Length: 170
Image (tube, rainbow, N blue to C red; front, side):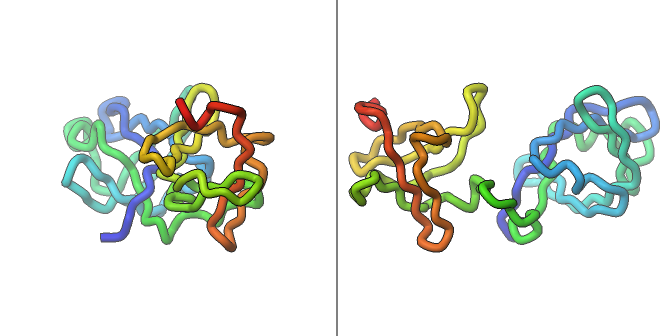
């Protein structure tokens, strides 16, 4: 199975006709279109779903899937993630980086000293944070913002940081 990226989370059924309330967790909500194929995942269980209809509802979307015709069928999907294979992710626009894309990239300071490796990109209320495993084996969160992030280089899979004194010692 290919690695999957979560693009939505199924919260609950809406009404009696099989619609589901979806929390969008992608920066590209345009992928939720009738005919789009997604992977539903809950624990080890997975299945393929095709979107039959989409409509906005408050801060979420209401989706109906082919073959999900009533509230009982919708309830069976509740709590699951909607995913796409990594290979089907939209290309990142200039200046945008996916968390899965920068995993295992090298972090260096402005002098070229190795600081650690990226474990992932966390979305927090304070903004995006790099999760970096330092050379000492500790995991620290580093704001993914200028002026701390000086340069991100896809070609060399390297991120240059200029962290304030003590940030990596927390």
